[in-house]
Amino acid sequence: MIKRSITTKLTIGFVLIIIISTLCIGIIGINIFRNNIFEMKEKNITLHAQKLESVLEPYIENGMDSKEYKDIVKGVSSFDNTKVWMINLKGEIRTIYENEDKVLKKNPDPQGVYSEIITSALGGKLKSMQGYNAYYDENMMSVAVPIVKGDKSIIGVIIVHSSTIDLSNSMNEFFIYLIAAVLGEVIIAGLLGFYFSKNITKPIKIINEAAMQMTEGNFKLKTNIYQKDEIGELSTSFDILSSRLEYNIRQQEKLEQMRKDFVANVSHEFRTPLTIIRGNLEGLYDGVIPMEEHHDNYYTLIKETKRLEVMVSDLLSLSKLESGKVELNLQKLDLKEILRDITRVLKPITKAKNIELELIDDGNLSPVWSDYDKLKQLLIIFIDNAIKFSHVNSKIKLAIILENINQKDTLSITITDYGIGISKEDIPFIGERFYKADKARKYSGNSTGLGISIAKHLIEILNCKLEIKSQINVGTQIKIEFLKFEDEIHL
Image (cartoon, rainbow, N blue to C red; front, side, top):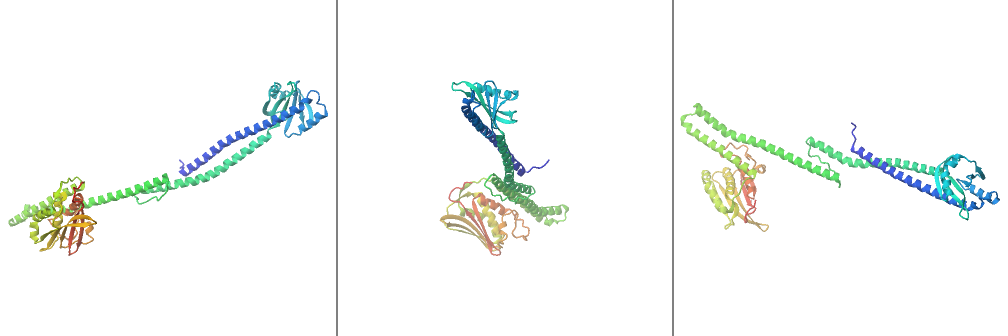
């Protein structure tokens, strides 16, 4: 099938509308023009016939041989484009034409053709007709007028004939002008229709090409069509759709990459303890490990099993936090009491490295609305990390700070250590699953790599703000700011 573009269809449509409308108007115009000119001609002929009747009536019966009558006949014959017949009561037709006044022999053709208007005129009524006149061999308009004497008696009929060739010529000329107008309008309408159709279809083609590009995966392409009409709205909607699809695909790609990284990291983190457990079990089974070392092997197995248990527990906690299905038990909490409680819980760890946990506060502080277990878990994660990466015989400061910023009180907890620190390049990635700032750090059975990820989710749930400042070999400061602490938090 031949492909017809929208441009072609619209152009043809414009041209057809112009042709049909012009022809309809032309046909109506021709009919109005024809009726008007024929009606006007009929009025003129009738007026001429009535004047002839009033002039010739005195000579009809006994004065047709007088000099005065012949002078009148000469004047009548000089009237352009008319032929006059006079019919007496005997039915004789006398013509007044070309300076002659002669009797038309009884011929059945003219008498038969004009019998209707002759009879009507003899009855005292004006009558007209149009048609072919065999006597003059042309189409003519004829008007019959009765000749009435002073006593109201009818003594004859005057028929005035006038050729309609001039009217036909006018009609033909009008028709030629109409055809010329139609042809001119077709050309103009075709050019304008093509121009406007092009302007309409051009943006549609651009949108179509962009859609085809999208099917090939290119969602960055924009139509850049700015029109204040339906096509402009369509283009804007298309660009919005393209942007959203691009964003969604990027998110899907990012999620897919995160899934792959997560699987890879989980596999990596699980592999080490499983390898240790398997190695010890195979050694015990094969009997290659001396009896005196069995106790150490059992301890290693228990230790790695606990590590796997902690890792699975952390994964479940992280999954629960990410799903948003965590319920909070909000209550008024004293931050100093929570930090003292955490200090007691972590005392065995700090004692092993001889690290001092120094608690600093601003005196009387307002309680905060929060979840005790979740807040305690959050603080333990950061304090435990500070202990891990602090030097032996060092200090960690735990400060509760109440500040007035922009005429608004803000409450925060800072955890400051003087350990190995974190590079500026690594800070943005802190909190990603299994991410370790120190890539060269050896395997540690005490870390799952999920703690900070869990902490970041807890920060959001507890309506807090996290800020990390660090410098290599100087230390790290973690700041947890409570965005709302005087009233109950609504989540």
